Image (cartoon, rainbow, N blue to C red; front, side, top):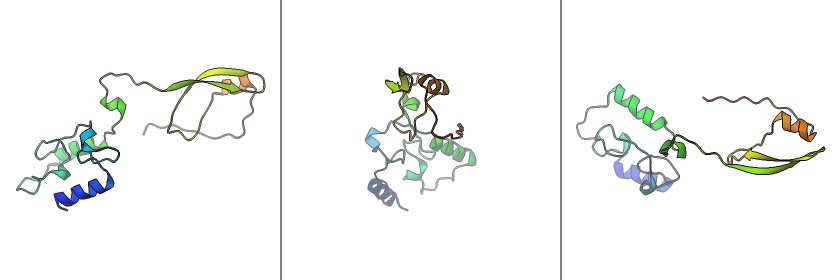
Length: 138
């Protein structure tokens, strides 16, 4: 695929030309990528010099590119501080016995909400169903 064809596909899909991800354009891109061929600020697949008698990237260079591509862009990765702030809010939970005002973590991407067993017993609530939940980092 030619460079102009690649640009057209990225533009049609609304992808960033530099980071090759949807959601923002190259002008607002704050990620750091580096071409393995010419050292400019884009991935090697977008390099215009890749067809000019350049040696194929070594396996070491390919590993570097894969590692760069595996990094996800989020606010924690572009921040200058080591702290991550989580959204919280105070909520009033009413139960059979009483009501409590508690601080809850807010996750706008979550599909379910959970409360601790201690809070269930303090409010005199009965579970509707039980579900096994496992968390894994990878």
